[in-house]
Image (tube, rainbow, N blue to C red; front, top):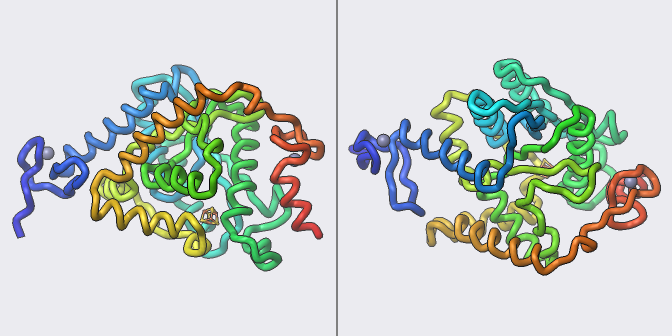
Length: 306
Ligand code: SF4
Ligand code: ZN
Ligand code: ZN
């Protein structure tokens, strides 16, 4: 079957971007992805010369593509990259993606630091799931955030780069609205932070849909195992993901429109809130920044020790 010609150069296309009504060939698609990455880095002033960027590397397609894009950018802009991987202890999944993480870091000569739920917090996620009925992602999200921040502090990073793509961001926006937690979205896009213990986060893949990241990885010959966490299936996020994919299929451009609305909403929310809303106090147990006397990580560890 003959494929439609590329919108830019008329070669046979490899993808149809329904939201932009464009077919693109492999070469033009690769340029398109790299342009979108650069556009976000510039627009939100994510990286400055000589900064130290720690990338949260899981070994999945998003973080590995981000590792390659950052390493490419480093040829034009001098900055340092380290990788931090968190081993949650999910047998048959994380141990396999970590093999990719190690291989890619070696290939690009990027130092990798691995922190683990079992070693650093005493419980692997698999062990936690044998003890409790609470959703795996609730434990995982809190503990992973803590360890990523800790690892980035240990390597003296200025910022943490996260491989969140357009699908992740649009899901997060809808989830926070549905949970009536809109304030969690404030400062989501701002690489500045109000607490020196919290390393600012940047998300350079914010404009790139998940499917396009997968295709980019394939076209660039990156050897990535396309696997899904065995606990993902039971999460609220998975439900939203399915709904959103269905809506995108019927109404192309939905995810990008959610992102644009969110960027506008975030600016307005930030303007109308005073800085004191973001004040953190040190957790009485571990000293990590917290909005209450005891931080969420310590509360959860206490619950586990009962
Ligand atoms: Fe953790 Fe949930 Fe992601 Fe699995 S899907 S890695 S449990 S946050
Ligand atoms: Zn082309
Ligand atoms: Zn604490």
